[in-house]
Amino acid sequence: MAAFQYQVVAHTYTVGHVMLFIYLVLETATSLRCASRVMACLLGLYQLSGTSPSWFAGRLWLLRVGYYKLTRPKEQAQDWVWIVDHTMQLGVGCLKMPCRGHF
Image (cartoon, rainbow, N blue to C red; front, top):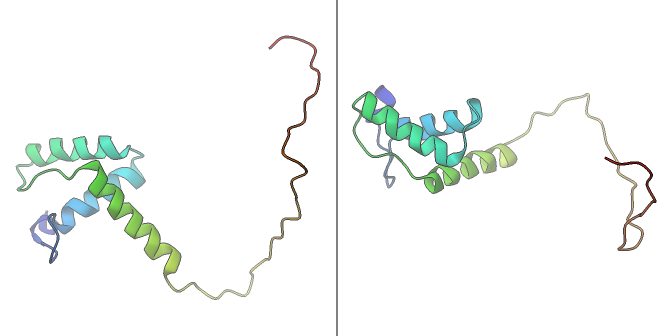
């Protein structure tokens, strides 16, 4: 509960709001809109200050986490493998085959 007391400079919500929203989406597999509504319920239940963030604010937080994971320094391992894809597209149509039977 202490995380709900730390306000980040130039942000509307506390660290606790951000952590709870990201946890709800990534760990409990709730949708963005559902996570926003669940947070509204939890904030009211535990009588925490502040309002529930919108799903769009949570989306921006998740995008920031993803950007960090893509741009952070990677561990240099010795057991890396190169995977090469040699497939190519032939034309713009699709393959149509006659089919017997009913689905």
